[in-house]
Amino acid sequence: MTRTQRIAAGAALLAVVVAAAAFAWRGGNVYPRLTLREPHLALPDPNQALHPGADGRPLLLVVIENTPQARPQSGLADACLVYALPTEARITRFLAAYCGHRPAEIGPVRSARRYMLELAGDLDAILVHAGSSAEALTQIRRERLRVINQFWRPGPFWRDARRQMPHNLYTGYDRLLADLEHAPMVTTYRPLPYAFSYEATAPESSTPAEVVSLDYGPLYAVRYHYDPAQGRYLREQDGLPHADADGRQIAPRSILVAFVRWMDLWVNGAPSSRIDLVGGGRLVILTGGRLREGTWTRPARGPLAFADETGATVVLPPGPVWIELFPLDRPFAAAPVR
Image (cartoon, rainbow, N blue to C red; front, side, top):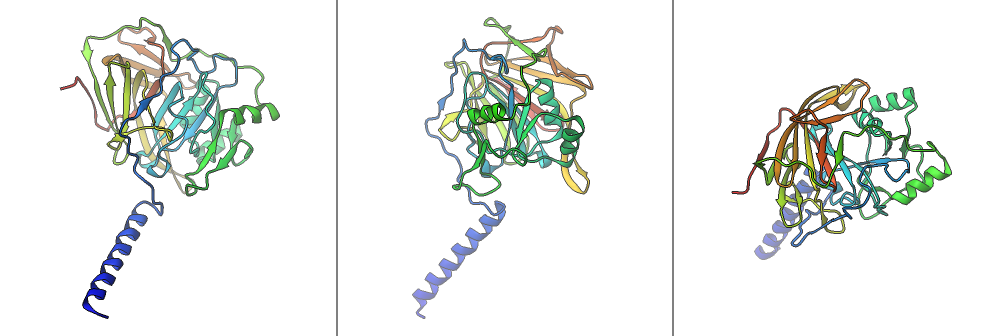
């Protein structure tokens, strides 16, 4: 072998080693980083019924994965209400509800935790998921909760062969409705007092907050930039625009940040997590590029309630809402544009 051939062979070997190390670091999945040069916004009709379940159908709350392997997700830009919340090691997941929009593809769908069942109960919603923690499974069986679990009802789910398991499970809104028609769980939607209300002339604060940062941890740090031209907060994640698979950037009209006590724990020998949703705490209300302070409360049997600094129920302008359940011990910042 000539010297040139040895150099070429060494370079090839180094490339293989580097690729293998990257593959292992990513947990055995090679995934692209999402880059959007000109993301466009999802702007729903402001006159549509925006409260989840307002159309009289059973309310569906879908558990959507947020690991790097699951990005970009499908169906988040169409959601009228999304909970963002940490699971084990502060890896965030989303609970997405839909009002009017009926996306054909939602996912990747992943497993449930007990506090997700509690939030679904607050909305009288059917939780859509694929498996669960041992603690959540016990609660589902003990209380006979209404869920669409892919392990038990696989009909409305499919796997995308272009992605690796378990980050490739999807469902669709109409598929879920068809599954409920085939095997009904509930006949009518039971409206519950909701955590906030909508009005076209929602109150504003004098405190500007066009840039909002929520540092859940590495790979999951979130930043919102307020776009006054659209009246929306552009969501970024891990330093990149957070967008659906079709390129639409996540852009809620309002953000509610509820500061909660989160913890990692082991249940029956397996890792799990818990969010303490009983009691109350600080709430930050972000609308129109401005910040208001408030409080969240939730009794032992729910439902969750949001109040502003006067003690009145939080009023938001019509449009999509993201509720960030944010750990008390993580860095949060909101400031005007500099």
